[in-house]
Image (cartoon, rainbow, N blue to C red; front, side, top):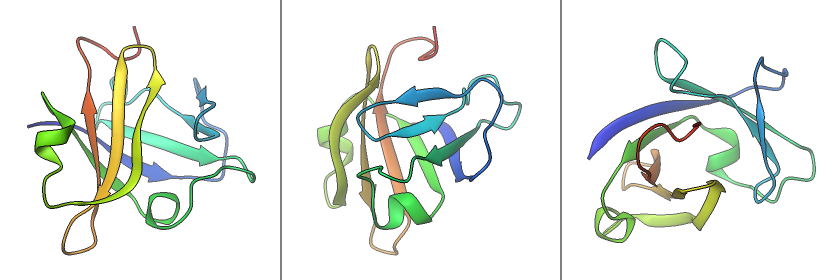
Length: 109
C-alpha cells in the first residue's frame, strides 16, 4: 500500500475541478496539491450517501483492491472515475473511510 491522498468535502467550487459522472461529484487533482489533498464537491443529486459523503477519507494506491479490502465493509463498489483509474470506498472497524485505488503513473494525465 502506498499513500495517495486525503479527500476533504467542500461546498465551494475549486480551481481545476473534474466532474465524475458515476458519482456526480467534482474532484480536484490531488497530485498537484502540495499536501496531497483532494477536494470533493457533491452535486445535490449525487447517489453517494453515508460516510463517503459526510466524512473525509484517506486513499491508498494498491496493487489489488480485492486483496487490500479484505475485512473492510464496502461503502461504494468498484468503479472507474477517470480513465485507467479503478477505485472503491470502504469503512474500517473504527469507522474511518478508506479509498483503495489501482492506477499507473499520474491519474490526471
